Image 1 (cartoon, rainbow, N blue to C red):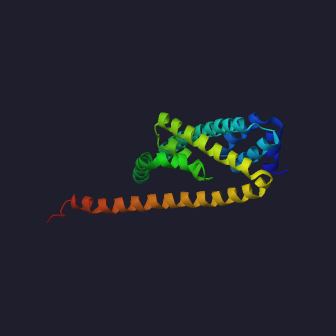
Image 2 (image 1 turned 120 degrees about the vertical axis):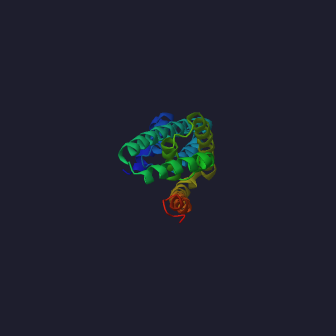
Image 3 (image 1 turned 30 degrees about the vertical axis):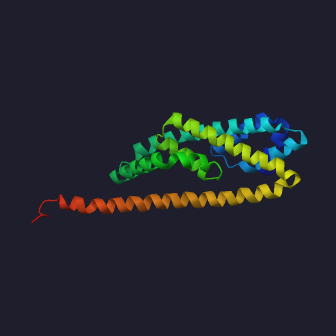
Length: 212
């Protein structure tokens, strides 16, 4: 039995408890097809196996818990990097990344929910950059409700056609999420390199004998 079939059978048997647990694990980094699980839950609501609004609440709670677990994983990663990487360049790079994330992170945290890979990246990096936790809680709560409502409603509307559409959608969102993460990392390194290049002439001018 594949992981998808196992997860669906758990939801069928244990209902909301399984939905909370599985989405908590999925958003904490365990490779689970989260969108597939929610779309299938929406379909189950049409069969009377799950309640539509109860499924949204359970999914929102599960994803909210998972995003918080990922945040604290990020804080531990930050501690590990701080202790093991003593290079000034790396430290400056991390500080720049923290500034950049604190500036644009709000949009990414909510939008990132809809893309596998990106949602984990934003959660981990929120912890690594010590993003304001109170603000983070509000954003992940909003994202959890929007994300859960969208996919469970989609499953309800798709009805018997949910499976084929869910698998295709999950794969495409995964690819898009990975591309966005790579683009973000590339954009960050380009900006970091430009900053270093603009600082180099200034540092050269401060060297003895450069004004002779």
